[in-house]
Image (cartoon, rainbow, N blue to C red; front, side, top):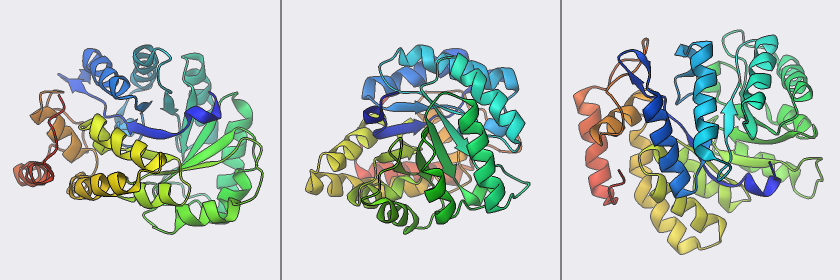
Length: 301
């Protein structure tokens, strides 16, 4: 994947189910909605309920996403797990299925040290011939990929960026500040891992967002990010601030509970989520819909 293509809106795809099984038709349809909006695909991340997917389901979602993208937009396949050997095996299979890049979350639950995190990511990157996006989300994994560790990993030729979802508003800026003027082998891009931080991150040199909201509003999010990347700041600011309460609504309950409820409300998927996640409370959906109405977003079905 050319480095220039690693920019813009990448949608952290939900995984649709029907009658307890993977809904392959819906996987295709949802992917095609994103392709039509020009957004890259990130299947099998947090929003995709990856911990509950069986191994064959995980690979099938990646395969269907690659087929739907048909080379028109990049597919960055989630391939992280809590063990290095397992991650390497999954990464190799995603590469065989045609993914353009890999997103690797910090190993979760076992809480490795910074030395362990660095060794893990280096081992996976060396084992696969694909660009790698690091994924830092300590609220989910229990471990934070430190700034110094990130900067060392940026020196690995095929580690080309990070989805920074620590919730620390300064972290993405700090990465970019420390890399300013430095040449790193594959280039290194910072993506907002929280929709609400997209504009601040892009304003200081970030490359876009890995978005939850774009599942429901692919065009609105995509156009907002593009305006920012193109330097149309007045337009980007207005659109971003309009979307901000909607972004916040995606976390009224644990992600992907609200976004799945909103997508079912729009007849985009069946009302299913896998335990231990449970379906959204009626008040959650009502509040999210109220914020969408207040934002005056054009319906995208």
